[in-house]
Length: 468
Image (cartoon, rainbow, N blue to C red; front, side, top):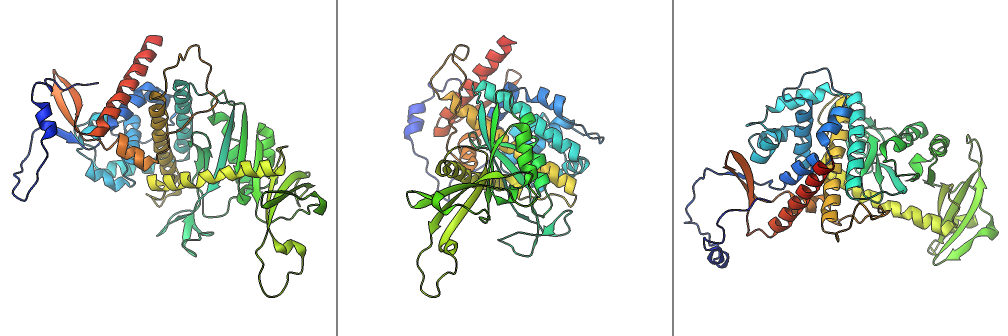
Protein backbone atom coordinates (compact mmCIF):
# COMPACT_ATOMS: atom_id res chain seq x y z
CA UNK A 1 0.00 0.00 0.00
CA UNK A 2 1.44 3.36 -1.03
CA UNK A 3 1.25 6.13 1.53
CA UNK A 4 1.46 9.79 0.69
CA UNK A 5 4.39 11.42 2.51
CA UNK A 6 3.94 14.17 5.09
CA UNK A 7 0.17 13.98 4.99
CA UNK A 8 -0.17 14.63 8.71
CA UNK A 9 2.22 17.61 8.68
CA UNK A 10 0.35 19.70 6.15
CA UNK A 11 -2.81 20.54 8.00
CA UNK A 12 -4.96 17.60 6.94
CA UNK A 13 -7.42 18.40 9.76
CA UNK A 14 -7.96 21.88 8.37
CA UNK A 15 -8.45 20.45 4.88
CA UNK A 16 -10.97 17.91 6.16
CA UNK A 17 -12.95 20.58 8.01
CA UNK A 18 -12.88 23.06 5.16
CA UNK A 19 -15.77 22.58 2.76
CA UNK A 20 -15.40 22.93 -0.99
CA UNK A 21 -17.12 25.97 -2.51
CA UNK A 22 -17.52 26.13 -6.30
CA UNK A 23 -18.95 29.24 -7.92
CA UNK A 24 -19.11 30.55 -11.47
CA UNK A 25 -16.01 32.62 -10.65
CA UNK A 26 -13.94 29.62 -9.51
CA UNK A 27 -10.58 29.66 -11.36
CA UNK A 28 -9.52 26.67 -13.38
CA UNK A 29 -6.40 25.44 -15.16
CA UNK A 30 -4.34 22.35 -15.72
CA UNK A 31 -1.81 20.32 -13.74
CA UNK A 32 1.12 18.13 -14.66
CA UNK A 33 0.02 15.04 -12.67
CA UNK A 34 -1.43 12.02 -14.43
CA UNK A 35 -4.96 11.48 -13.15
CA UNK A 36 -7.26 8.53 -13.70
CA UNK A 37 -10.87 7.65 -13.01
CA UNK A 38 -10.06 3.91 -13.03
CA UNK A 39 -7.93 3.74 -9.90
CA UNK A 40 -9.32 0.31 -9.01
CA UNK A 41 -7.72 -1.17 -12.11
CA UNK A 42 -4.61 -1.72 -9.99
CA UNK A 43 -6.56 -4.44 -8.14
CA UNK A 44 -7.10 -6.26 -11.44
CA UNK A 45 -3.37 -6.02 -12.24
CA UNK A 46 -2.57 -7.63 -8.88
CA UNK A 47 -5.30 -10.25 -9.34
CA UNK A 48 -3.96 -11.21 -12.76
CA UNK A 49 -0.49 -11.63 -11.25
CA UNK A 50 -1.83 -13.57 -8.26
CA UNK A 51 -3.57 -16.24 -10.34
CA UNK A 52 -0.74 -16.43 -12.87
CA UNK A 53 -2.95 -15.31 -15.74
CA UNK A 54 -0.01 -14.72 -18.10
CA UNK A 55 1.22 -18.29 -17.70
CA UNK A 56 -2.32 -19.63 -18.08
CA UNK A 57 -2.80 -17.63 -21.26
CA UNK A 58 0.49 -18.74 -22.77
CA UNK A 59 -0.33 -22.37 -22.03
CA UNK A 60 -3.92 -22.54 -23.29
CA UNK A 61 -4.50 -19.80 -25.86
CA UNK A 62 -4.50 -20.91 -29.50
CA UNK A 63 -2.57 -18.21 -31.35
CA UNK A 64 -3.92 -17.10 -34.72
CA UNK A 65 -1.69 -16.83 -37.75
CA UNK A 66 -1.91 -13.04 -37.83
CA UNK A 67 0.94 -11.27 -36.04
CA UNK A 68 -0.22 -8.97 -33.24
CA UNK A 69 1.22 -5.49 -32.81
CA UNK A 70 1.37 -5.73 -29.01
CA UNK A 71 1.66 -9.51 -28.86
CA UNK A 72 -1.28 -11.84 -28.46
CA UNK A 73 -1.47 -11.53 -24.68
CA UNK A 74 -1.56 -7.74 -24.59
CA UNK A 75 -4.02 -7.53 -27.48
CA UNK A 76 -6.43 -9.90 -25.71
CA UNK A 77 -5.80 -8.14 -22.40
CA UNK A 78 -6.59 -4.81 -24.07
CA UNK A 79 -9.95 -6.17 -25.24
CA UNK A 80 -10.64 -7.52 -21.74
CA UNK A 81 -9.72 -4.19 -20.13
CA UNK A 82 -12.12 -2.34 -22.42
CA UNK A 83 -14.95 -4.63 -21.33
CA UNK A 84 -13.82 -4.67 -17.71
CA UNK A 85 -14.06 -0.90 -17.30
CA UNK A 86 -17.57 -0.84 -18.78
CA UNK A 87 -17.18 -0.10 -22.50
CA UNK A 88 -18.89 -2.53 -24.86
CA UNK A 89 -17.77 -1.67 -28.40
CA UNK A 90 -14.34 -1.61 -29.98
CA UNK A 91 -14.93 1.92 -31.22
CA UNK A 92 -14.86 3.06 -27.59
CA UNK A 93 -11.09 2.51 -27.55
CA UNK A 94 -10.82 6.03 -28.94
CA UNK A 95 -11.93 7.39 -25.55
CA UNK A 96 -9.22 5.59 -23.54
CA UNK A 97 -6.24 5.66 -25.92
CA UNK A 98 -4.19 7.78 -23.50
CA UNK A 99 -5.87 6.73 -20.21
CA UNK A 100 -3.06 6.41 -17.68
CA UNK A 101 -4.14 3.19 -15.93
CA UNK A 102 -5.04 1.29 -19.10
CA UNK A 103 -1.88 2.37 -20.92
CA UNK A 104 0.19 1.57 -17.84
CA UNK A 105 -1.35 -1.90 -17.57
CA UNK A 106 -0.52 -2.60 -21.22
CA UNK A 107 2.86 -0.84 -20.82
CA UNK A 108 2.43 1.57 -23.71
CA UNK A 109 2.34 5.34 -23.84
CA UNK A 110 -0.66 5.30 -26.19
CA UNK A 111 -2.94 2.52 -27.34
CA UNK A 112 -2.86 1.47 -30.99
CA UNK A 113 -5.52 2.77 -33.35
CA UNK A 114 -8.98 1.29 -33.05
CA UNK A 115 -8.59 -0.41 -36.43
CA UNK A 116 -5.71 -2.47 -34.99
CA UNK A 117 -8.08 -4.12 -32.53
CA UNK A 118 -10.71 -4.54 -35.26
CA UNK A 119 -8.27 -6.40 -37.50
CA UNK A 120 -7.02 -8.55 -34.63
CA UNK A 121 -10.56 -9.56 -33.64
CA UNK A 122 -11.29 -10.41 -37.30
CA UNK A 123 -8.27 -12.74 -37.32
CA UNK A 124 -9.67 -14.82 -34.43
CA UNK A 125 -11.90 -17.81 -35.02
CA UNK A 126 -13.46 -20.86 -33.39
CA UNK A 127 -10.13 -22.34 -32.12
CA UNK A 128 -9.42 -19.12 -30.22
CA UNK A 129 -12.96 -19.11 -28.78
CA UNK A 130 -12.53 -22.67 -27.51
CA UNK A 131 -9.13 -21.84 -26.01
CA UNK A 132 -10.61 -18.89 -24.09
CA UNK A 133 -12.87 -21.38 -22.28
CA UNK A 134 -9.76 -23.32 -21.25
CA UNK A 135 -8.13 -20.10 -20.03
CA UNK A 136 -11.21 -19.33 -17.94
CA UNK A 137 -11.28 -22.87 -16.52
CA UNK A 138 -7.61 -22.75 -15.48
CA UNK A 139 -8.07 -19.34 -13.86
CA UNK A 140 -11.15 -20.65 -12.01
CA UNK A 141 -9.08 -23.42 -10.44
CA UNK A 142 -6.58 -20.88 -9.14
CA UNK A 143 -9.24 -18.56 -7.68
CA UNK A 144 -11.10 -21.39 -5.95
CA UNK A 145 -7.83 -22.60 -4.44
CA UNK A 146 -7.06 -19.09 -3.15
CA UNK A 147 -10.51 -18.93 -1.53
CA UNK A 148 -10.13 -22.48 -0.11
CA UNK A 149 -13.34 -23.34 -1.92
CA UNK A 150 -13.56 -26.98 -2.95
CA UNK A 151 -17.17 -28.07 -3.51
CA UNK A 152 -17.84 -31.69 -4.32
CA UNK A 153 -21.16 -30.86 -5.99
CA UNK A 154 -22.17 -27.94 -8.19
CA UNK A 155 -25.36 -26.90 -9.93
CA UNK A 156 -25.22 -25.69 -13.54
CA UNK A 157 -28.10 -23.64 -14.93
CA UNK A 158 -28.49 -23.51 -18.73
CA UNK A 159 -30.45 -20.86 -20.57
CA UNK A 160 -30.55 -19.01 -23.85
CA UNK A 161 -31.29 -15.41 -24.73
CA UNK A 162 -32.23 -13.55 -27.89
CA UNK A 163 -29.98 -10.83 -29.34
CA UNK A 164 -31.72 -8.65 -31.88
CA UNK A 165 -29.33 -7.72 -34.69
CA UNK A 166 -29.53 -5.16 -37.48
CA UNK A 167 -27.98 -5.44 -40.91
CA UNK A 168 -26.53 -8.43 -42.68
CA UNK A 169 -25.17 -10.46 -39.75
CA UNK A 170 -24.01 -13.97 -40.51
CA UNK A 171 -26.15 -16.59 -38.74
CA UNK A 172 -29.02 -14.26 -37.80
CA UNK A 173 -32.49 -15.75 -38.28
CA UNK A 174 -36.07 -14.76 -37.61
CA UNK A 175 -37.00 -16.90 -34.64
CA UNK A 176 -38.32 -16.60 -31.10
CA UNK A 177 -37.88 -12.96 -30.13
CA UNK A 178 -40.69 -11.76 -27.83
CA UNK A 179 -39.48 -8.15 -27.54
CA UNK A 180 -38.86 -7.59 -31.27
CA UNK A 181 -41.10 -10.01 -33.11
CA UNK A 182 -40.14 -10.77 -36.68
CA UNK A 183 -36.63 -9.30 -36.46
CA UNK A 184 -33.50 -11.41 -37.05
CA UNK A 185 -31.71 -12.61 -33.92
CA UNK A 186 -28.76 -14.53 -32.63
CA UNK A 187 -29.52 -16.97 -29.84
CA UNK A 188 -26.50 -17.63 -27.57
CA UNK A 189 -26.58 -20.29 -24.86
CA UNK A 190 -25.01 -19.66 -21.45
CA UNK A 191 -24.23 -22.05 -18.59
CA UNK A 192 -23.76 -20.56 -15.11
CA UNK A 193 -22.60 -22.05 -11.80
CA UNK A 194 -25.39 -21.44 -9.31
CA UNK A 195 -23.26 -20.98 -6.18
CA UNK A 196 -20.58 -18.58 -7.45
CA UNK A 197 -22.60 -17.14 -10.39
CA UNK A 198 -19.66 -17.71 -12.73
CA UNK A 199 -19.98 -18.36 -16.43
CA UNK A 200 -18.93 -21.94 -17.08
CA UNK A 201 -19.33 -22.33 -20.83
CA UNK A 202 -21.59 -21.44 -23.73
CA UNK A 203 -21.50 -20.35 -27.33
CA UNK A 204 -22.80 -17.79 -29.76
CA UNK A 205 -25.49 -19.46 -31.83
CA UNK A 206 -27.65 -18.87 -34.86
CA UNK A 207 -31.16 -17.64 -34.25
CA UNK A 208 -32.82 -21.09 -34.30
CA UNK A 209 -34.15 -22.92 -31.26
CA UNK A 210 -31.52 -25.12 -29.66
CA UNK A 211 -31.61 -28.80 -30.64
CA UNK A 212 -31.14 -31.69 -28.23
CA UNK A 213 -27.79 -32.59 -29.84
CA UNK A 214 -26.51 -29.03 -29.35
CA UNK A 215 -27.54 -29.21 -25.69
CA UNK A 216 -25.68 -32.51 -25.37
CA UNK A 217 -22.49 -30.94 -26.77
CA UNK A 218 -22.64 -28.24 -24.11
CA UNK A 219 -23.20 -30.75 -21.30
CA UNK A 220 -20.25 -32.86 -22.44
CA UNK A 221 -17.95 -29.84 -21.84
CA UNK A 222 -18.76 -29.42 -18.14
CA UNK A 223 -16.40 -32.02 -16.70
CA UNK A 224 -13.26 -30.64 -18.40
CA UNK A 225 -14.00 -27.05 -17.34
CA UNK A 226 -14.61 -27.73 -13.64
CA UNK A 227 -11.91 -28.14 -10.97
CA UNK A 228 -10.99 -31.68 -9.95
CA UNK A 229 -12.66 -31.31 -6.54
CA UNK A 230 -16.12 -31.40 -8.19
CA UNK A 231 -17.42 -34.96 -8.20
CA UNK A 232 -21.06 -34.49 -9.14
CA UNK A 233 -22.99 -31.97 -11.23
CA UNK A 234 -26.72 -31.25 -11.28
CA UNK A 235 -27.95 -29.75 -14.56
CA UNK A 236 -31.10 -27.62 -14.73
CA UNK A 237 -32.76 -26.22 -17.83
CA UNK A 238 -36.17 -25.23 -19.14
CA UNK A 239 -38.26 -26.93 -21.82
CA UNK A 240 -35.93 -25.91 -24.66
CA UNK A 241 -33.22 -28.26 -23.37
CA UNK A 242 -35.27 -31.38 -22.81
CA UNK A 243 -34.47 -34.24 -25.19
CA UNK A 244 -33.16 -37.77 -25.26
CA UNK A 245 -29.69 -36.65 -26.44
CA UNK A 246 -29.31 -34.22 -23.52
CA UNK A 247 -30.41 -36.90 -21.02
CA UNK A 248 -27.93 -39.40 -22.51
CA UNK A 249 -25.15 -36.79 -22.22
CA UNK A 250 -25.97 -36.28 -18.53
CA UNK A 251 -25.93 -40.02 -17.90
CA UNK A 252 -22.67 -40.47 -19.79
CA UNK A 253 -20.97 -37.83 -17.63
CA UNK A 254 -22.61 -39.01 -14.40
CA UNK A 255 -24.64 -35.79 -13.95
CA UNK A 256 -28.08 -35.59 -12.42
CA UNK A 257 -30.65 -33.42 -14.21
CA UNK A 258 -33.98 -31.64 -14.00
CA UNK A 259 -35.45 -30.24 -17.19
CA UNK A 260 -38.72 -28.36 -17.43
CA UNK A 261 -41.36 -29.38 -19.92
CA UNK A 262 -43.76 -26.84 -21.38
CA UNK A 263 -46.85 -29.04 -21.56
CA UNK A 264 -47.68 -32.00 -19.35
CA UNK A 265 -48.03 -34.82 -21.89
CA UNK A 266 -47.59 -37.68 -19.36
CA UNK A 267 -50.73 -39.11 -17.81
CA UNK A 268 -50.43 -38.84 -14.04
CA UNK A 269 -52.52 -41.19 -11.88
CA UNK A 270 -55.39 -39.28 -10.30
CA UNK A 271 -54.93 -41.02 -6.95
CA UNK A 272 -51.27 -39.95 -6.84
CA UNK A 273 -51.89 -36.23 -6.35
CA UNK A 274 -51.04 -34.90 -2.88
CA UNK A 275 -51.18 -31.36 -1.52
CA UNK A 276 -48.42 -29.16 -0.10
CA UNK A 277 -49.63 -25.64 0.56
CA UNK A 278 -51.61 -24.29 -2.37
CA UNK A 279 -50.25 -26.76 -4.92
CA UNK A 280 -50.76 -30.42 -5.67
CA UNK A 281 -47.93 -32.73 -6.74
CA UNK A 282 -47.61 -36.04 -8.55
CA UNK A 283 -45.12 -38.29 -10.37
CA UNK A 284 -45.08 -41.07 -12.95
CA UNK A 285 -42.86 -43.00 -15.36
CA UNK A 286 -43.30 -42.01 -19.00
CA UNK A 287 -41.49 -42.66 -22.29
CA UNK A 288 -41.97 -39.87 -24.88
CA UNK A 289 -41.87 -40.76 -28.56
CA UNK A 290 -38.29 -41.24 -29.78
CA UNK A 291 -36.80 -41.74 -26.30
CA UNK A 292 -34.88 -44.92 -25.52
CA UNK A 293 -36.62 -45.65 -22.22
CA UNK A 294 -39.10 -44.29 -19.71
CA UNK A 295 -37.99 -41.51 -17.35
CA UNK A 296 -39.37 -40.06 -14.16
CA UNK A 297 -41.69 -37.09 -14.59
CA UNK A 298 -42.90 -34.92 -11.73
CA UNK A 299 -45.63 -32.28 -11.88
CA UNK A 300 -47.35 -29.60 -9.87
CA UNK A 301 -50.77 -28.16 -10.52
CA UNK A 302 -52.83 -25.26 -9.25
CA UNK A 303 -56.53 -24.78 -9.79
CA UNK A 304 -57.41 -21.90 -12.08
CA UNK A 305 -59.51 -19.06 -10.82
CA UNK A 306 -63.18 -19.57 -11.49
CA UNK A 307 -64.36 -17.85 -14.62
CA UNK A 308 -67.90 -17.19 -15.73
CA UNK A 309 -68.97 -18.67 -19.02
CA UNK A 310 -68.69 -22.09 -20.60
CA UNK A 311 -67.31 -24.90 -18.41
CA UNK A 312 -64.18 -26.84 -19.45
CA UNK A 313 -64.76 -30.15 -21.17
CA UNK A 314 -61.91 -31.97 -19.38
CA UNK A 315 -61.02 -31.86 -15.72
CA UNK A 316 -57.35 -31.25 -16.56
CA UNK A 317 -58.31 -27.92 -18.14
CA UNK A 318 -59.29 -26.62 -14.69
CA UNK A 319 -55.61 -26.60 -13.59
CA UNK A 320 -52.35 -24.86 -14.46
CA UNK A 321 -49.82 -27.71 -14.68
CA UNK A 322 -46.01 -27.59 -14.59
CA UNK A 323 -44.16 -30.73 -15.62
CA UNK A 324 -40.47 -31.74 -15.27
CA UNK A 325 -38.31 -34.71 -16.20
CA UNK A 326 -35.65 -35.65 -13.65
CA UNK A 327 -33.55 -38.51 -12.31
CA UNK A 328 -33.63 -37.20 -8.75
CA UNK A 329 -35.32 -39.50 -6.24
CA UNK A 330 -36.64 -36.83 -3.86
CA UNK A 331 -40.34 -36.16 -3.40
CA UNK A 332 -41.92 -34.14 -6.23
CA UNK A 333 -42.43 -31.00 -4.14
CA UNK A 334 -38.75 -31.02 -3.09
CA UNK A 335 -37.62 -31.60 -6.69
CA UNK A 336 -39.71 -28.73 -8.04
CA UNK A 337 -38.67 -26.39 -5.20
CA UNK A 338 -35.03 -27.13 -6.04
CA UNK A 339 -35.67 -26.46 -9.73
CA UNK A 340 -37.29 -23.10 -8.95
CA UNK A 341 -33.93 -21.78 -7.70
CA UNK A 342 -32.97 -21.77 -11.38
CA UNK A 343 -34.78 -18.41 -11.61
CA UNK A 344 -31.53 -16.83 -10.40
CA UNK A 345 -30.07 -17.35 -13.89
CA UNK A 346 -32.23 -14.61 -15.38
CA UNK A 347 -30.50 -11.72 -13.52
CA UNK A 348 -27.13 -13.21 -14.50
CA UNK A 349 -28.07 -13.12 -18.19
CA UNK A 350 -29.25 -9.53 -17.73
CA UNK A 351 -25.87 -8.64 -16.21
CA UNK A 352 -24.04 -10.34 -19.05
CA UNK A 353 -26.10 -8.35 -21.55
CA UNK A 354 -25.18 -5.10 -19.81
CA UNK A 355 -21.52 -6.15 -19.77
CA UNK A 356 -21.40 -6.36 -23.57
CA UNK A 357 -23.28 -9.47 -24.66
CA UNK A 358 -25.69 -7.36 -26.70
CA UNK A 359 -22.85 -5.84 -28.73
CA UNK A 360 -22.35 -7.54 -32.09
CA UNK A 361 -19.06 -6.14 -33.42
CA UNK A 362 -18.79 -7.90 -36.79
CA UNK A 363 -20.75 -9.36 -39.66
CA UNK A 364 -18.67 -12.55 -39.41
CA UNK A 365 -20.16 -15.21 -37.14
CA UNK A 366 -16.76 -16.48 -35.96
CA UNK A 367 -15.63 -13.01 -34.85
CA UNK A 368 -18.89 -12.55 -32.96
CA UNK A 369 -18.37 -15.93 -31.30
CA UNK A 370 -14.89 -14.94 -30.10
CA UNK A 371 -16.18 -11.60 -28.84
CA UNK A 372 -18.90 -13.45 -26.94
CA UNK A 373 -16.25 -15.49 -25.11
CA UNK A 374 -14.21 -12.33 -24.39
CA UNK A 375 -17.27 -10.66 -22.86
CA UNK A 376 -17.90 -13.65 -20.62
CA UNK A 377 -14.22 -13.88 -19.62
CA UNK A 378 -14.34 -10.22 -18.55
CA UNK A 379 -17.57 -11.05 -16.71
CA UNK A 380 -15.74 -13.85 -14.87
CA UNK A 381 -12.87 -11.52 -13.96
CA UNK A 382 -15.38 -9.39 -12.09
CA UNK A 383 -16.82 -12.48 -10.40
CA UNK A 384 -13.37 -13.59 -9.28
CA UNK A 385 -12.51 -10.15 -7.98
CA UNK A 386 -15.73 -10.15 -5.95
CA UNK A 387 -14.93 -13.64 -4.62
CA UNK A 388 -11.50 -12.53 -3.43
CA UNK A 389 -12.86 -9.22 -2.09
CA UNK A 390 -15.39 -11.16 -0.03
CA UNK A 391 -12.70 -13.59 1.10
CA UNK A 392 -10.45 -10.73 2.23
CA UNK A 393 -12.96 -9.47 4.83
CA UNK A 394 -13.74 -12.88 6.37
CA UNK A 395 -12.25 -13.97 9.70
CA UNK A 396 -8.66 -15.16 9.37
CA UNK A 397 -8.43 -18.94 9.10
CA UNK A 398 -5.45 -21.23 8.78
CA UNK A 399 -5.63 -22.33 5.15
CA UNK A 400 -3.14 -25.15 5.74
CA UNK A 401 -5.03 -26.91 8.56
CA UNK A 402 -8.63 -25.81 7.97
CA UNK A 403 -10.70 -28.08 5.70
CA UNK A 404 -11.76 -26.67 2.33
CA UNK A 405 -15.14 -24.95 2.19
CA UNK A 406 -18.10 -26.68 0.57
CA UNK A 407 -20.08 -23.42 0.39
CA UNK A 408 -19.11 -19.84 -0.30
CA UNK A 409 -20.96 -16.56 0.13
CA UNK A 410 -20.86 -14.18 -2.82
CA UNK A 411 -21.04 -10.41 -2.18
CA UNK A 412 -24.55 -9.40 -3.07
CA UNK A 413 -23.85 -6.34 -5.26
CA UNK A 414 -24.38 -6.39 -8.98
CA UNK A 415 -21.39 -5.93 -11.27
CA UNK A 416 -22.49 -2.36 -11.92
CA UNK A 417 -22.36 -1.59 -8.18
CA UNK A 418 -19.05 -3.41 -7.79
CA UNK A 419 -17.61 -1.31 -10.60
CA UNK A 420 -18.58 1.86 -8.74
CA UNK A 421 -17.03 0.62 -5.50
CA UNK A 422 -13.89 -1.12 -6.75
CA UNK A 423 -13.03 0.47 -10.09
CA UNK A 424 -14.27 4.04 -10.46
CA UNK A 425 -12.05 5.39 -7.68
CA UNK A 426 -10.11 8.48 -8.71
CA UNK A 427 -6.34 8.25 -8.32
CA UNK A 428 -3.15 10.10 -9.12
CA UNK A 429 -0.16 8.40 -10.74
CA UNK A 430 3.10 9.88 -9.54
CA UNK A 431 6.66 9.05 -10.54
CA UNK A 432 9.04 8.79 -7.61
CA UNK A 433 12.52 7.25 -7.41
CA UNK A 434 12.19 6.06 -11.01
CA UNK A 435 9.02 4.17 -10.13
CA UNK A 436 5.35 4.89 -10.69
CA UNK A 437 3.02 4.85 -7.70
CA UNK A 438 -0.74 5.20 -7.43
CA UNK A 439 -2.16 7.52 -4.78
CA UNK A 440 -5.78 7.61 -3.62
CA UNK A 441 -7.56 10.48 -1.94
CA UNK A 442 -8.07 10.29 1.80
CA UNK A 443 -11.34 12.19 1.30
CA UNK A 444 -12.90 9.39 -0.79
CA UNK A 445 -14.59 6.92 1.60
CA UNK A 446 -14.11 4.09 -0.94
CA UNK A 447 -10.33 4.41 -1.01
CA UNK A 448 -9.85 2.89 2.47
CA UNK A 449 -11.60 -0.33 1.47
CA UNK A 450 -9.75 -0.43 -1.85
CA UNK A 451 -6.38 -0.01 -0.12
CA UNK A 452 -7.25 -2.84 2.27
CA UNK A 453 -8.12 -5.07 -0.69
CA UNK A 454 -4.85 -4.17 -2.43
CA UNK A 455 -2.95 -4.99 0.76
CA UNK A 456 -4.74 -8.37 0.90
CA UNK A 457 -3.75 -9.12 -2.72
CA UNK A 458 -0.13 -8.15 -1.98
CA UNK A 459 -0.10 -10.48 1.03
CA UNK A 460 -1.44 -13.40 -1.02
CA UNK A 461 1.06 -12.69 -3.80
CA UNK A 462 3.90 -12.72 -1.25
CA UNK A 463 2.64 -16.04 0.12
CA UNK A 464 2.63 -17.53 -3.36
CA UNK A 465 6.16 -16.34 -4.09
CA UNK A 466 7.41 -17.79 -0.81
CA UNK A 467 5.63 -21.11 -1.45
CA UNK A 468 7.21 -21.33 -4.90
